[in-house]
Image (cartoon, rainbow, N blue to C red):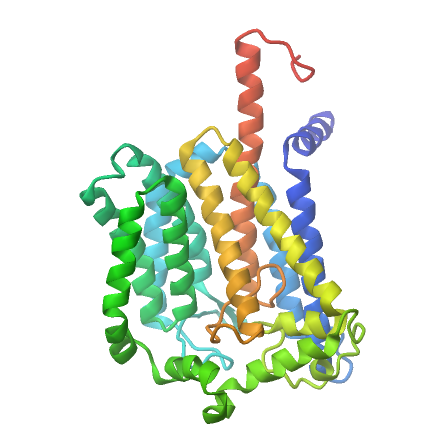
Length: 393
């Protein structure tokens, strides 16, 4: 018992309590919004919706996994990069063969059904965390040759693998997040600007081909609907209802469980992609800003951990995690405000969904491990060189 108490005390002292509390509070906020969004769909006698239960389980399990992962030395996790890479490729190949499309996303066979439970797992969410680890290590391994064309080519191949795999399954939204993570991590690693300029030129050159041969009709229509909404009323309907719901909330909101659009289920998938419309309508500008501030603080804390990390590879991973969260927040809120087309991107910590919430907490566990073991190793180094601090024994 004494050892257990000491272990708990040590964990509390060394872990990033601020980040852990921030994530827990933000997820609790998200659960409240999902409950409100799904409340009108409850059958007689039901207390919680399926989406709410799934998210609650995912957040609870995610917190446990995050704590367990934080107890592992990040150097051990990094050494597993070949297995992590193989797992990511393997699970995406399995998805290509046996993937299913849920009722809400008939255009994407990007989910695996878990046994007879009826629960869906979206492997691309797990692969995002795997990519952060493997690509962060890759960038560190070639940091002395980043200016060479051969190095750039291999880094591009590394990123192209998950991008192509998720595109084939029909998950264009996740592919976009992978691309943004790739570009952001390359920039933070110090890649020369001329490579970004060359990449932008290539993207501009192949854009017409992508539009003609790669994009599906639904994806094209979602883009065109932003510019010609009167021609695509059915396509833009979700975003029209979403922005009306946000606008109706005003400064303080209509009140929790009192939003006209939310409680009438007028906004399709408002528990997932359009959860921001629920926040905006029922809690108003104040609630929306609070949600943005909470996620911004999480991202800033992760970046701060990356800045303080002693290892280049773990700094890359922290930046990758921060970029992933920031990209999803910007795109999701942009969809809700009719600034971007709908691409099926969740709002981290807020949108319903087991895979996305669980995967985010796996990434948070990695960040907590980096924070914890950088703290303990710095203290060990101080003891070794004979410098006494209030923490030395």
